[in-house]
Image (tube, rainbow, N blue to C red):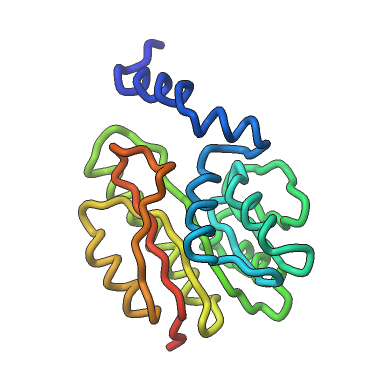
Length: 207
């Protein structure tokens, strides 16, 4: 089956991407690690001993970055509907986190059920239909926000990937209502033509 021009362009960009090459050199599972490393350097979202849930974690590069910053006294639980190869210091729960059994398994892996930070780099499989892809990505972001608002302890934080477009402003407003501070980040590792940005909410206000 022949690839579409857009698929061929993506593959060429991918293999020519300096971040892809650097990730391989440094032992990270994907180039996405550099987005989180930049945010961590700027905002210090991870501290030693924290409890963190990584949603849509596979293949695991964000979990790698988080685990490095939490230390052995921290707790990191990752979840995805896809399998993920084991990582030191990371508990993995396979399945849909919106289902009760998976949700409960995630919380049971956190001592006391107190979650300091929820991170989500989830994105749908892109179809090329911009409107459809936007609605799918916003749906995933909304699921992640619902999860964070349910499990975070007061003062906790939430970092999520969101694509600018239909529904973005309403989503941002929903996040702003739940946190003392809301910031937008566009890491250098994000491809310039991508509409993705990262919203960082800190100081969770439990209702």
